Image (cartoon, rainbow, N blue to C red; front, side):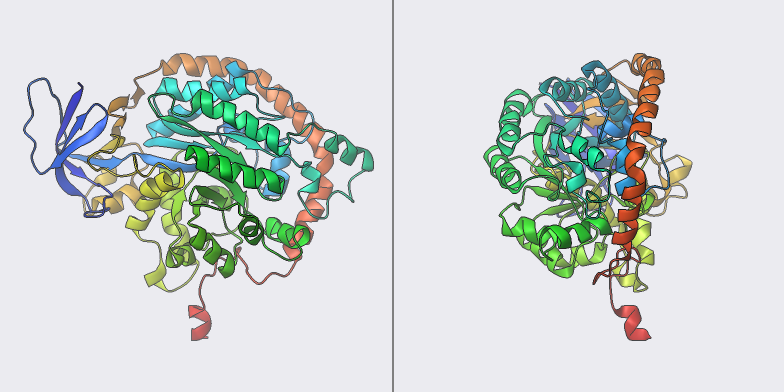
Length: 511
């Protein structure tokens, strides 16, 4: 039996009693779980004792939406809206199968940077181009198991030709280009569900339960209805997450009008029975009030990816409207090409600040407890993990982060929770634990040789960049038509405007 006692720390438990308010507590961890939380715990013979004086302990952060695939594209693109950016980060044509050894290095690099910033759980919506096989999926799962992080890992699927998932595109591209896209192999719904059953058998519960498989239909406009319904049913069978991109951009809102006869994408998902409490919507920006009510009734979670939404110019999520409706929100970095970072603490600060300019009613601005809830319990709930992680409570897995509060980020030490969200960037982290195992100690990973991983990653980058340059050139053929479609969708009148971010009529009542 392994026992660790942390003594005399300030602790943000995120439980129902003290929430985001730091309290002085001792913690006893036994075999990877919190076994006792009290104002004073007397160590026993054989206990490992950690001095928590001057430390702030928080639950490990949950990145509720990300794509490890994009780590190879970090820092490569700028000033592109989603529909154009995807041409290059997720090339439609010309892609070659990525070797599992490269995927292993890519995943380890992504996990290393994440965990050093206090992320102990990743909801990794993995999309491989041109498609994901079981060996590639295993490379991701095995890398996460080796580094010691917790992760939901997906088989992301698009089973409609990409040119048919956007309005104003297919009839404007050269016919031969459209035919080439439509000739690309795709999986049927049954083939994807069979693949997922194998993935559940091989990976769901690996790493002493830390690794879980999740289903990831890319978006309602990108997959067939039978796949959406089948994924929802299979997720219920395995008590797993279904992760779907929904209404990230205005073009996607227009797509609903075009594909579903004026119905929204949320309305369509609801009407075909593809929503449940296991469902997470990535983004959920261009939603109507009726959409939000449907999301709330179905107990769907939404991952708020504030930095990515800003970089791609996608719009501003209606934070307060979601909270008013009782919708569970998590926080995500999205991929390293659309946000250029896997560090969730940057998203926390951005989310806390962004919505202060969406309306002048300051009583409706995000609070620090709300942001911390989204970064911990909210993300855990979205990943169907809230029974085991997301808060520091007896019986839960001991996933935690320890911050040194004697660093400049926490001085002059006013409200520690405010310092955490607004002043700290991860530089004060001294220890990260997952399942009670120390995975980061004083800035160094403990479970892998990070220097060796970095050296191996540097060695493959020249050929990766060469391949990226080739793919950019191939897919540039789509850019003029996609740009025109983006402009046409941008000009389409809609009853909502998520580029302004305005959430209330308060200002209009004043003027």
